[in-house]
Amino acid sequence: MDAEDIVQETFIAYGQSSSADPVRNVRAYLYRIATNRCLDLLRSSAKKRELYVGPWLPEPLVGDVVSGGAPGDEDPAQAYERSESMSTAYLMLLQQLNAVERAIFLLRELYQYSYEDISEIVGKQAANCRQIYHRAQKSIRDSKGEHPTAEVAESLVKSFVQSVFKGDQSRILELVSDNIVFLSDGGGKVRAAQVPVRGANAVLSLLQNLLVMYDATYQFDYVLINGTPGLRFDFDDGNRYIYSFGFREGVIDHIYCICNPDKLGHVPPLNNGNL
Image (cartoon, rainbow, N blue to C red; front, side):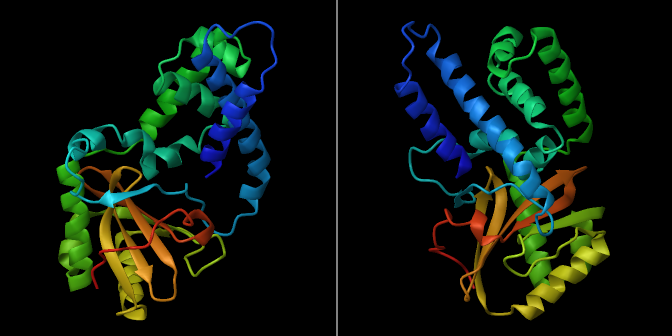
């Protein structure tokens, strides 16, 4: 929602520009306005993040039902191959960078801007931008998990969920890392774990307890979360829980759960959920 506001503000600012000189590169000019707005927002929200209750996760983009899509839509497999840059795991890695580092990294990595253009946008020397980019790239590369094919990711997620519902502990342990981490973002607004849950046994115990606690009080479906296979739970009390996953060495090594209602206001009601 913040991103949508910034895009709108960027075009308003461009339309109200009173410069007598015509803009030679409109695209770069718009990126400069948007980037500066983003930097201002990130800096102003840093203090709020320090006071946040429990783990913080990026706002999810909830897409179509997994393997779905209307006729004429882009091939889901092709779309998935380009989705790494918006996956929850990738966005979490970007949080390791400060605001300017993140801007430089994204302008170079995603939009292929030259260091000279990036220099003008962020107000740093081109040589500094090059150095910052390579340092950020190394940090991201060293920490990054895997981005399996769409088919593999969907199969892992569905097998995991089905095994949890069946209580098949041996199968669950085959599908997850021994060091799996469960992060739950409730923002202090709804019930959620306020610390990361680590380890296969601890995560399995948590999920089993949740199933018993909320038995027959929800609908769920498999959907795309930030472009990757995930699922959503809609509860009878109106709360929603959105799950996405991270992968490493062919198994699930992170589970991300977002249930802070402030981050889910844009999510439409579940139409075809399964009890």
